Length: 302
Image (cartoon, rainbow, N blue to C red; front, side, top):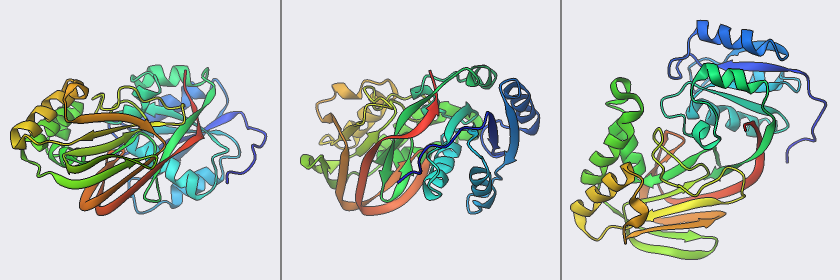
């Protein structure tokens, strides 16, 4: 249960993660200068050690009603929102300056992808409710996908530094060709929508993954539901390659073995399968449970 809203201090706490995308100290200082035109600014480097949440926790705890400004990508936002949940601080507003590789949450929120344009607009934007997902007890802000999605992220990692967001669709094609399917049962809101050979099962709060690949084209951040995509291939390796290429071009919904449904509660059981949650690889599990938490976060967006 989030605490009641309290009087909001006029200002911002800038959370800068030096390991996210192209973030650097000079750009962070420019962001602080721009935001300073709209209120006081506190700079809080959160470090690049994912196992050390103390600096981030301290920044959130001491925000005093200021807007938390995440300077980074989906991973940085994921980490911040997860710590807000742990500290019961969903009373705070969140702003996002996209500096990651994919920036899919920013795309779904219709925020400018250019960081300077994003900071120019941030002071004028109002906080609007946004849904989040809770998956296997952890926070997810944009999407989680199991099977091919996790394999694609692993494949893309070898090209990410050189190709940026273009590495993701390439990873999808490679994983689609070589991944071995899983036997899974997928249930949405208590109704079995798939039971059998599965290439990918995912639930999207936002419409895209991997730097703009629209895996969940009908997803919205504020409708209290998510879009579920299930791909079951009976065509062997050729069918998986077709799925990977179709996903790259946003045409996977036309394939006869792909289902798209909307829902609030998503369960997967069967063979252990790895997951990709907001770009973070989660280890293989025989059971996945993801639920939409409506209007949990207040994000500054158009």
